[in-house]
Image (cartoon, rainbow, N blue to C red; front, side, top):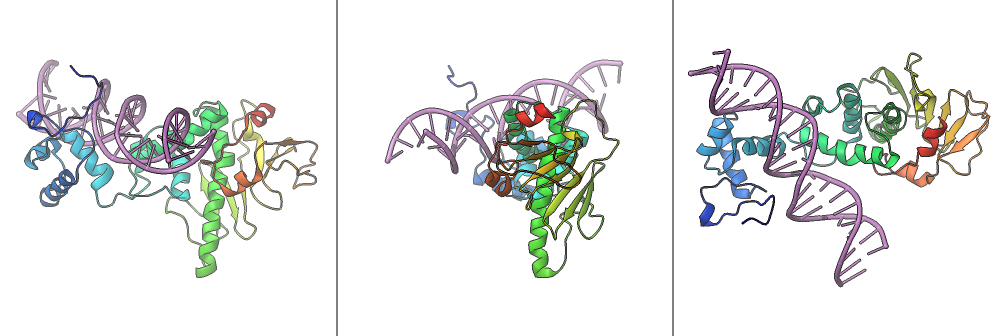
Amino acid sequence: MSTNTKSFSSSSSEDDNELRRGPWTLEEDTLLIQYIARHGEGRWNLLANRAGLRRTGKSCRLRWLNYLKPDVKRGNLTPEEQLMILDLHSKWGNRWSKIAQYLPGRTDNEIKNYWRTRVQKQARHLKIDTNSTEFQNIIRCFWMPRLLQKIGDQNQLASSHQHSITAPSPQLQFTHEQGAVNMSGYEYNLDIEKQNTECILPSELPMETPNTSQFSEYHTSSPFGGAMVHNDHNVYTNDHDMEVSNFGNSAAAESYYVPESESNWLETDFSCSMWNMDELLQRC
DNA sequence: AAAGAGCTCAACCGCCCTAAG
DNA sequence: TCTTAGGGCGGTTGAGCTCTT
């Protein structure tokens, strides 16, 4: 009688002939690596038998592709990679393997985990559906510019040493040397000198519902602390104390404040900082 | 210091598609 | 045409780690 709904089989002599499940041991990893080095990948069930692994073919394939394969990257996703994921997910949805093709060394599993643990967490916090237009626009107008700024900061740091700006990845198209990036029909201007990132939305952007898609500009850093200029000429900022006036093309008729500390905005990325945008979204 | 909550990510599950026989 | 095996995919789970109280 089993007490666990999902118990991993042990290595006792009783179940020596049973398939093993659960975490892989160093010995199993070694067997798999050595077999593939000699005979290559594929025919996973046969491979499992011949390599002497008491695992399913599927389990071997998964272990190899997601963990043991030499070109699998380890460590946190870079801002460039996060940006790619956000952009590609907006095009293809949960097509993790397809998205992974554009992120060399990253697996579909890793990308899926990133989406669930970081992106969906934000959506839950904001009490909106990840598939909603509102959330898509939040990603475009808040999250992606933040990542671009991070990339810009990194490039600025690099250029201070190398006197050159390097594109973050082949998939991100920097259209001029100041760092304009064109993704999904949106042009992100990355002004490295001013440490300023703008998301310029195309005029043909669908506007079925009034929401953050109506933001015409987005500024993330000083001298404005962090603010968006809405098409209605209102300025939305994360700075509690800032009175906004004569900012860009806005007349600053009215200001709305996002109740979140400036330090959170400036020092952490979107995936770590929980922004309270309920009020903002309601007002949009 | 300890306990509980929250988070991460490796691994599994079940479904689907395709090709071979 | 049907069956079967291999492989791929997205969804889900849970052990172990980290953070918070």
